[in-house]
Structures are given as structure tokens and as C-alpha cells.
Image (tube, rainbow, N blue to C red):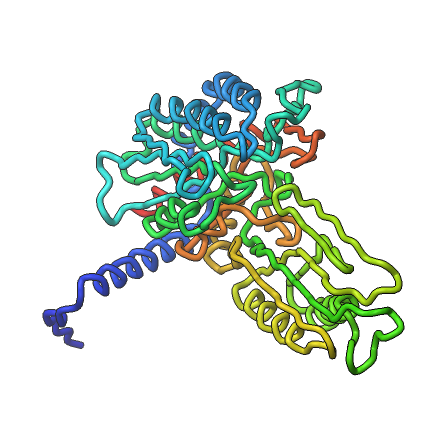
Length: 459
């Protein structure tokens, strides 16, 4: 068989760039597919033992950094506190040789994000690029009574945001520090994005999530360091997206004796009840879709304050309701599920009962992180790492047990993504939040060796 090589037809620069990216992604996918099928013993065990040893040396300082970060209140709306935590991690990344930048968040009404980047001195344009994702903010406001890092016993420590997700941030910097000290980052490039608004995203999302999306477009692989479902035996290959919706219904106010009449119709509350029940009947068994009306106000008048999530309503039993307001969310595992929900909900809303008019607004939010084959292959590699360390297998989290997270904005732009690699524990988002410190060094070992193996597969 004879092969004839010819000069390719000239293509526009942007198309050449896209084709090159696809070629690199396919090459990376091939290497990971091959490595997953191979024995973990094919990797350099002496190097991996050195990684574990180096991390163990780092852990006392890592615990100090964790305690210091937890003791800084960084509720999303405490802009100064979020930036203070960002500056703490900036010092950590500066110390290990990363280039750092604080991205001001005033354009999206949040504190901002910390970006840290490193390009290996021997890294070429075709070498591995990894995006690592964390967040600086917590759900605990500046005046919340839950403010301090408090050891419970030899294994557990309580603290606001300790697992969600200051522990994950420390795992990122500790794993990278160990790899840097052992000169194992030379042939790859790393970009870390620690956002300041994961718990309550700034708007518009096009600005508040731009750093994540830009990083994902640059990267081959995205790794998220949330705590997943707080089980060290699981990791996240899929997350359902989350978007908010608002329903507003108006009716014809009149004496209650005239309800159902041709002139008055059914009133806003009956129409709202019809719509919500139809949502349930037509969509509740569709895939992994859920949709929840979280608050409802109806009567002659109603007011709702989105900032405080509180409202009031006025009405009398002998008056046909004039207005009804509902706030809720939609959670979907795939873009197709989300689009089906949006279309069906709008169709249901449009079938108004006589005398009523309804408007359904579906906002922007977190996109789904779909369960792709690439994500499962990356999970398999991570599980192999865990088993080789004697920590057991790692399985996929049920997506109904993992909420929306920042990695969802990145997952659709990379070939492989995995989340839930952070510090494990229990009680997230509550005053009972606590970390299982037994998972701290283990998940740092696993993250560092995963990155090392990914780099080895590329060469």
C-alpha cells in the first residue's frame, strides 16, 4: 500500500485552532484509555512513594493553613473576608512558584477570584494542561455565630466552610507543592481558579464565571475539589445543573360568589395550582429531572424580597385572588433534560384557565455536568490511584446526592472532568459542618499522584 502525502488545503486560523484542539483531546483520550486498562504497577512506584513522603512532610503546615483560612469569615457577601482568604492562598501559591492574580469582582457584584498559573519549564504547547477548581466563599455570613475552627477529637474538626471548601483549596496547593518540590511539574501546565462566589453566584454569569470558562477552554482536564457527597469512597462524574424560575399569575378580583363565572373566571390561585400540578404530572418521572416550588404567595396582593427570601401576602376568603407568585428551581443532569423541562413548563403555563394570565420566567444558572465516557475513564484512573495507595476503590456519586458546583461551568469544554476530590466530612452548609481529617492526607496523596500519572501518560 502506498501513502501519498500532500500539502493540506489552507484553512482559516480559527478552524485550524479548533482542529488542533480536537487532535490533542483525542490523543489525551487515547493515552488515558490505554492507562486505565493497564496495571497501576506500570507507573514508577519509587516516585509515587516520594510524593506521599513529601506530602506527609507538608501536612503540618497544611493543617495550619486550613485553620487560618477557616477562622477568616468569608461568607459570599463579606467581600473583604473573601479577599482576605484569597490573599492567604495567594501567598501559598506565590511561595511554590506560581504566578498569581486577584481578579476584582466589582463587575459582577462580588469580591473576586484568585487565579494561579504555572507552566513547566519543559512544557510545550502539546503538553498536558490541567484546570483545578476551588472556591473561597462560604454560606456563613459575617454575623453568623458559627465562626471558628474547633477540634472535636483526634479525627474530626468543626468549622465554617472546612469541607465546603477550604479543605479542598488546601489540598490543591499541598498537592502542587509536593509535585513542585520533586520537580514533577516540568512537563505540564496548571491553572488554578479559586472563585469568590460559588455559594451565591455574581451576575451576570457571563462575567462571574468567565475565569472558569476561559480556563476550561485552555485545559484538557478539569479537577474539582469540592467534598462531593462527603464519602471518601466516591467522586463526582456528573452534577445536575440548577436554574431558578419565577411564576407570576394574575386573575380577575371579584366577590367569591362569582368565581368560575364567565365574567370572572378561576382566579390566580386556582390557575397557579393547575400549573404546578401539571408540572408534577408531566415531568416528575422524566430522567433525573427535579423542579421544586420553594415559596408561594397569593391573594389580593403579595410582595417578595429576593435578597432576604421573605414575603407577605394579603387576601380574604370571600375575594377571588388577583395575584400569585412562585419561586423555584430546576435541576437537570443533561442539557437535553433541561431544555425539555423549559419547553414543557412554558407550554403548561400557556394553557391558561379563563380569566387568568400567567408568565413563567426561567433564569440563568449552573449548567449540567453530564456523565460522559471521558469522566468515567478519569474516575477509573483515580480509583486505580486510590487502590494502589491502599485506600480502596472510588465509585461514582449518584448525581442526586451532589448539588451544583463551579466545575459545571468547565465540564462541557474539557474532554474529562472529575469533582469531589476535596476534604470529606459531614454537615455542610450547617452549624454542624465538620471535617474527617483522616481524609485530608489521603485525598492529597490521591490528587498529587493522579496529576503525576496523567503527566506520565502524555509522554
